[in-house]
Length: 230
Image (cartoon, rainbow, N blue to C red; front, side, top):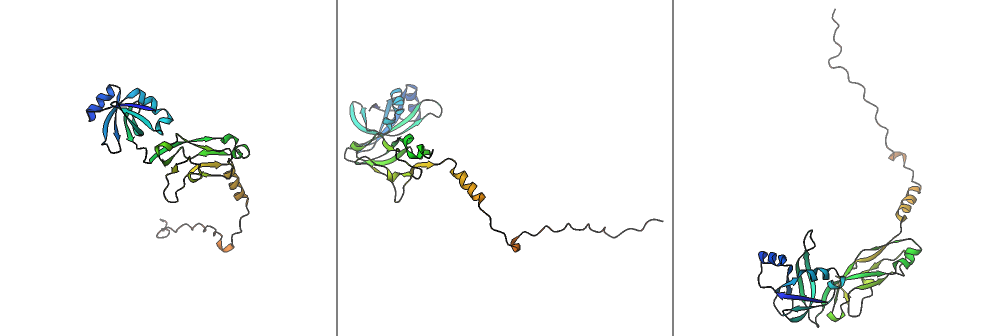
């Protein structure tokens, strides 16, 4: 995919506001040996590209002032309530240096799995994307997860995923987040019902609650009865 950009000379809040008024998006290109460069990009082509999943996890060809560079989309900011891109960041990449990217997960075959067909389970997609590291040439657009063999007893974690050649997940230590969970409807209710039906142990007499104390007798009138007047 291609991005056409131009070096941005005027910077600052006022300059960025004027750019947006002219239907352009201020941005930054950084990384590699070259210094960070302020850029501007036409708004509408960028806005439509951002709606494509591939644009977020692919090596992009950027044409900057007529020169071609390979970049990755790193960040972008949207207007709080208008369909307007406010700012965008790209990173230069080198063919011989690994990149660290979040790529989307695609789930297939879930409706044919034993978990769904035999146990009527609910399949939860806990993660929608995963952090990976690889060389630019090995970067996948997405990672596909086949759920056709999933059973009611299964849970899929990041380390269980079959990664493409040259790709590895970015995990710290023993970290292993859940990607797919399986829930059997009614299982929790059945467990509670079974627990309620279980016989309860008799409570020893010494541990039984003592009956409430008898109500206190009404207090005598202070000073006793007064003599009746003759």
